Length: 259
Image (cartoon, rainbow, N blue to C red; front, side, top):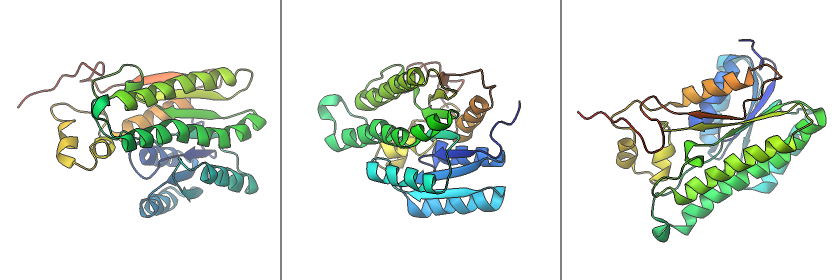
């Protein structure tokens, strides 16, 4: 397939680990310049140096939390001053926090998920997409989840945020009718990243059990899917891609092997 990303600029939120980091490395390996964001300064700096030294591409980094609207706007303004318009926007920053019944849920967990998964995506999109529309070209990739297609027990607010991402992805596509900008939601099933460790507030034993008995997706799988979507011909717009590991056929159906 033709390399459609070489020499372009890709903005990737949440690039310090997981899907974001894997995607930054995958695109950089194809000659794509990258703009990376993340909350964790040391990890962000490490990714920055790896990308520069390993792939010989241009890299910009911005350390902030997507929940901070003013920081999103500051980044967009800085890019405008540099006369850089992202060709690719990857709304990756997101998380699950807690796995409780709704009547036992922690309000702090709810606010963190709503503010990151929904409002953060909106803040970044509102800050960057006008630049892409003015130029009338680009590609938006939203990282959703299989959890945005089917609710599972104790998923409640996380499910709701990913259903919102699904709805926003559809809305962005509708609002972009008449432009050359494409928009896709890539929705993974079970993938072994820091996701479960974060969900269980750092409990590594609980996180490890999530992936026992089958081979889950890994971050590089999703990075490959993102590259595939970006490399499709300009007349092709993949709007939604749901990706499960082979052992999983829905959020409910999982083939776990027992020792």
